[in-house]
Length: 422
Ligand SMILES: Cc1ncc(COP(=O)(O)O)c(C=O)c1O
Image 1 (cartoon, helix red, strand yellow):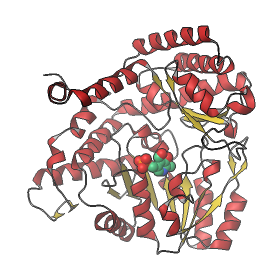
Image 2: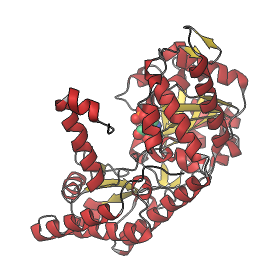
Image 3: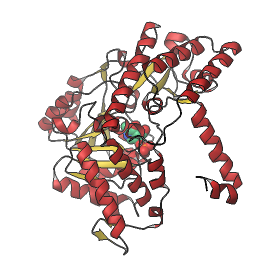
Image 4: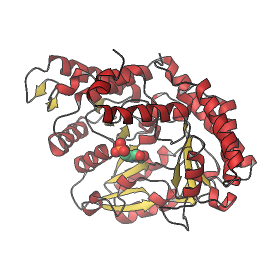
């Protein structure tokens, strides 16, 4: 039997959507910086019998019987997580990055306490207290921004001033649309002054930290990291919280995840996280992560050479945020649509202090983790960036559209998604 033969026979309606998605992923280039392709082994674990099992609690302390294999599997996953992030404790049960953040807030604070995090309009994330989120009703969120949107430098003086004024319980470093390294030392020294915990939400750069190609906040004394296990980590969709060394913090985090927030953990996904962490411990993963950065730099060069304004002036990580409205006269939505039509998937995104709306902003955000998984290197990254700019410059040119679409398809056929990475 092939992978989907049972679904095919039993449920043709749903099977058609699977075939469609496979085809879409195979024939187009994925540049959404938070997406990736997982290995066959990760998919096997995610589709395994562990989905049958209820395992409320933690290894050795469960509410139901029959846990000999789930306990062993979760321990292996935890051990690998600790090794990857230089952490003493890991909770691998959060269902996603948002769930990890909410559990972390409740573990470290009382309702009404304050978090100092990065402003969403300057690259932060919804779960860092955006007014539309429920968590914003429970805790008080204050913000820091970039000092200069064209260099990406964070305004650490403002950060310190806001910290001194508001006395946050948590100073949160982390982002979903910011392309520079952070000065983790500064965060820690400001947190010490006001007695705050330091937490890094490294959801986007989890894999890059695990591989050692970006700085690990724990090396600078951060207390906690929250993260996703998909994105650059190239594992199943899920979340995780790791603690550098404080046993009491780890205990509070465990309680906040279960029974505080969640019910039965998704054991099949924890198994898939374990498999992905095993892959990340393999030397190939470092080579992969280095190539992600090289590919992002190659794209950066094309955009800068073509005079397209990049937020933060460029990138040190896997993602880029381009002001296409200001530089090319095309809106973020128009760019997303026209690039989608030639097989390049990315997302519209607000740029810092965007004069336009979230539904049709000035920018696009794109990144290299998924294309790098397909073994595309600087030459392909350069060519894709050239095609992107040409298509955005000539968005109504049907001939160019056909020509670029054909080239993208040839490129994708030459770089199939590998089944295994080790
Ligand atoms: C910084 C950051 N935190 C949290 C999340 C939320 O993760 P999830 O979608 O798994 O809930 C994201 C996802 O984009 C993110 O970028």
